[in-house]
Length: 410
Ligand SMILES: *[C@@H]1O[C@H](CO)[C@@H](O)[C@H](O)[C@H]1NC(C)=O
Ligand SMILES: *[C@@H]1O[C@H](CO)[C@@H](O)[C@H](O)[C@H]1NC(C)=O
Ligand SMILES: *[C@@H]1O[C@H](CO)[C@@H](O)[C@H](O)[C@H]1NC(C)=O
Ligand SMILES: *[C@@H]1O[C@H](CO)[C@@H](O)[C@H](O)[C@H]1NC(C)=O
Ligand SMILES: *[C@@H]1O[C@H](CO)[C@@H](O)[C@H](O)[C@H]1NC(C)=O
Ligand SMILES: *[C@@H]1O[C@H](CO)[C@@H](O)[C@H](O)[C@H]1NC(C)=O
Ligand SMILES: *[C@@H]1O[C@H](CO)[C@@H](O)[C@H](O)[C@H]1NC(C)=O
Ligand SMILES: *[C@@H]1O[C@H](CO)[C@@H](O)[C@H](O)[C@H]1NC(C)=O
Ligand SMILES: *[C@@H]1O[C@H](CO)[C@@H](O)[C@H](O)[C@H]1NC(C)=O
Image: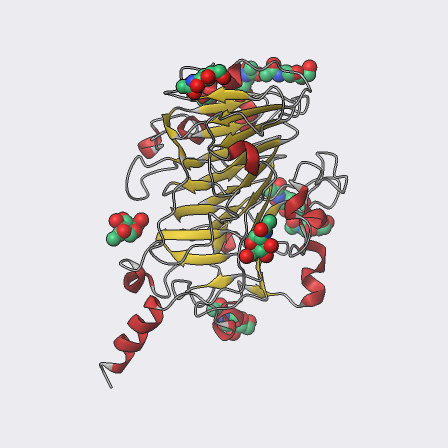
C-alpha cells in the first residue's frame, strides 16, 4: 500500500497534460517577423529595425528605437532582430506602437505557449533586466521593471496601502494600443522570490502581448490603475503573487508556469468607482503547470490560486487546466489582514476549470473560493465583457489583435 501512492503520483506527473486547448499563434505579422535575407520584407511601411549585428539596422538597442518615435498618434512598428538585449524599456507615447520579435514561429503556425512539462520554450528575441526590490532598495517596484508602459513615471508607481499611489486625475492616458509579438521579457535577479521584480508594468495604457514570455519570481506582471492588458499564447512564470495590480487583465490560451509557490498566483486590489467596474484578472482557456517535472513532486497541493490584496480583489479562472500543484482549497485569505481582506465584494472564483489540481469539494469547504455557475460567469466570460475605458465605457477592445477574438475565443 505504501508504495502505491508515490508510484501513481509520479506516473501522473510525468504524463502529458490533458488540457483541452491547442494553441495556434496569431499570424498578423508572420511575414514581417519571418527571418528572411531582407529582414524588413513583409513589414508595414516605415517599420524601424533594431539589430545588434546587422550594419543596415538604424538602431542597436530597442529603447533607442522607442525613444526616436514622436509622441503623436501615428502608429509605429519596430522589428527586432534575434538577440539578447540587456535593457530596461519604457513606453510613454500615446499613439499605437507594435514591437515585433523576429521569429519563424508565426509563419510556421507554431504556438509559443502550448507547452508541457520540460518543453523547451524561448523566443529568438530576449530582453533582460535583472533587478529586484529586496529590502526596499528602491522606493517603488516600478524601478525593477523590464518593460513599463504608462504616460508618466508617477502613473506607473505601485505605491502602498489599499489604494496604492494616488495618481492625479489630470494625468493623460498613455499608449492607446501597444502590442508585442514573440518577445521574452526576463527579470532573473534571484532564482527565488526575493522582493518584487517586474517583467512588465502597464498603467493608464492598453497593451496586448502575443506569443511572448514573462519570467521572474515575484510580482512578475503588474497591471496598474486604468491599465488594460491582454495576453494570448504567452507564458508567465513566477513564484509569488506573480499577477498583481489594480487594472483589468485578460489571459487567454496561455501557460502560467509555477517555479515554486508563495502568496498566490493572483493578488489584486480593486478600486471603488462611480460606475460598476470590472477591474480584475481573468484567466481563460489556459493551463497552470509547474515549471518542470523535477520540482513537481515538492509542489503537489501547495500553490494558492490567489489572495486579496484588498477586499475588492476580483479574479476568475475559467475553462483552465490545473495540474496537481494547485492547493485543493483554491484561493486563500491574506494572512495577517483583518478578516483576511475578505469582504462582501471579494471575488475569487473558478468556472469550468479541470485537471488533477481542481477539487470542487475542498474549494466549496474553503468558504473563500467561489465556484461560479453559468449565470454567474456571464458578466465576465469574454474580453469584451470586462475591458472598459477610464470613464467606464464599453466596448473597449479595439486595441486587441482581432485575429485572437474570433473563433475559439469566448
Ligand atoms: C544591407 O542592405 C543592402 C541593400 O538592401 C543589402 O544588399 C545588404 O545585403 C544588406 N546587408 C546586410 C548585412 O543585411
Ligand atoms: C504626449 O502627448 C500627449 C498629448 O499631447 C500629452 O498629454 C502627453 O503628456 C505627452 N507625453 C509625453 C511623454 O510627452
Ligand atoms: C494553424 O494550425 C491550426 C492547428 O493545427 C490549424 O487549425 C490552422 O488551420 C492552421 N492555420 C494555418 C494558416 O495553417
Ligand atoms: C525607465 O523607467 C524607469 C522607472 O520605471 C527608470 O528607472 C529608468 O531610468 C527609465 N529608463 C529609461 C531608458 O528611460
Ligand atoms: C510625482 O508624485 C510626487 C509625490 O506625490 C510629487 O511630489 C511629484 O511632483 C510628482 N511628479 C510629477 C512629475 O508630477
Ligand atoms: C526546474 O524549475 C526550477 C524553477 O524554475 C529551476 O530552479 C530548476 O533549475 C529547474 N530544473 C530543471 C531540471 O530544469
Ligand atoms: C470601497 O467602498 C467601501 C464602502 O464604502 C469601503 O468600505 C471600502 O473601504 C472601499 N475600498 C477601497 C479599496 O477604497
Ligand atoms: C460592494 O459593491 C457595491 C456595488 O458596487 C457597492 O455599492 C458597495 O459599496 C460595495 N461594498 C463594499 C464594502 O465594498
Ligand atoms: C465555512 O463556513 C461554515 C459555515 O459557516 C463553517 O462551519 C466552516 O468552519 C467554514 N470553513 C472554513 C474553512 O472556514
